[in-house]
Length: 471
Image 1 (tube, rainbow, N blue to C red):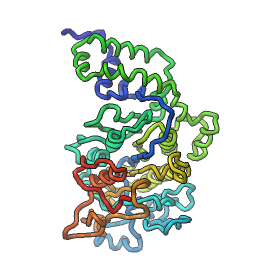
Image 2: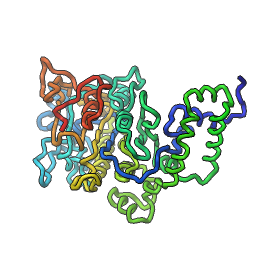
Image 3: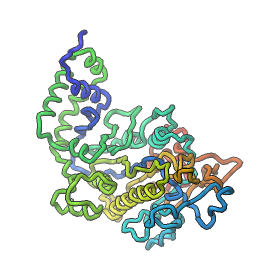
Image 4: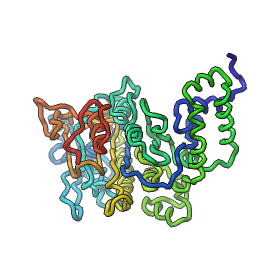
């Protein structure tokens, strides 16, 4: 069969994307429409947020700090740990933080690194210690960015740099099949699907304008042209390439999704994310997140506002988001690393405050945080010693933060060693050190725990969850 050489590159790209995505249609690398039923919007009973800190974070500044009075410079040859808090910005505290007791809660069992909390800041993530579990001493088994990131996204050790398995968000929506227009959004974070229909795929966006484009009624003839191409594609294959895609049932999927797409677009969901509008609702969002009167809202605070809106409006069940970057700092950049970390943590604090202060409609007295599970992670950590360039390199031992529904709170599980912060072997039932019979904590255990917290099948991880962290 002869190729149709009049086929445009854009059209070919569209057909390829449609064949691979099935539930959401892509044009090039930019999502342009979500296919879903437009019913009365209702929040999911259980929501999930996966927060990625890009580049490998310094755990001494974050969730695994050390006392600088104990781990002093004159003991470095013995401990192989140098907190280095005095080498950061003057606005960063020089000691780990134990947050003040929250009214109605027990005192904090968690000590935080100085980038998580600043007593002069308005939004302090550490103030929400009573919703948190910190897991320390996670062995990433890799020092490569791509591998570590994909390991935490899927809960499966990659093959080389290639991801293996579905993203945890895909597992969640694939198993729960939520009745929301866009079950999963991935904002500047990778997403994978190896066993679910396309309806479980994430709507991928790299900036806020992508999401607005995906949900906005078109002002051009682009949609009708794309529809015409798929109608042709569904009826009469027009090339060998198109015929090959037809085997995957793209035309059938399109036929069943076309009406749903029109309904979603007619719902004008894009207005929910237009925080620049002169409405009371948009003004409240700008006030809560410290946003300006005009967009785009692509900074950390704007992205956090997008997450809250998607969950509270019943638009999405899962949002995966990159909330901080600039952390791959090897050369004398302790200050920028600490400030970038703090910016991400402050935005996360705004999100938690918003969800904590918003009543959930399904149970009297509950807030959205009672129905939301949050995982905060990075691909690995930084070395506990500074290098010759006064920076920190890649380190195997990691930690993560779990918050919200289905999890124990105000808890620390596991530990890193007091020599070079090596990953400790622990009793996986208790988190206590067990040098004889203990095991390493792996990202697999974290993902199994997240899935088990909602009663979902975690067998894809091939490990048991950390059961002492489950409520």
